[in-house]
Image (cartoon, rainbow, N blue to C red):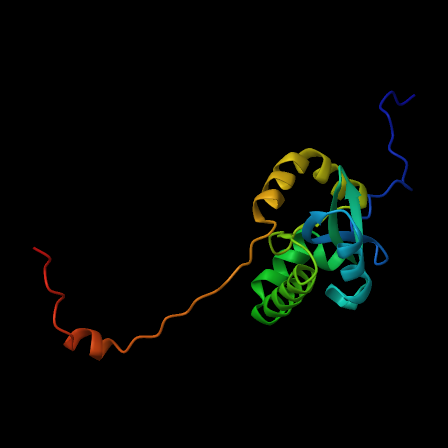
Length: 167
């Protein structure tokens, strides 16, 4: 009689390939919950030309789209960030969504490639960081972001006499 446990031959290693239909939640920005962000979500497309939606908690809303888990999971997103063409497309879409949302309301842009397993995890993030987000939004509301570029001819700067010293 054999006293050792025998492993059934039918038991195979679990299949770790991503489900092609599985999706994750990509977050573009956070704002106060309400009509302005919902309106932006209804007229914009996100990554993979997917529709945008809002996920809400604690009076805040995250602007989110579903993305394929295989392409935006840990290995997929790493490959996208290493491919300059993919990275450029990802950055352009992310920026376009944030900019369009900003046209209607104050938003806090999320970092590029902010991906959660699902909307429940996005909601938990909003609940966990809600006070910080609300404080930052309060500080930004009523303000406008401006970018300023200054061009100077270095030859003119080098040829200019030094400023006179004040007595």
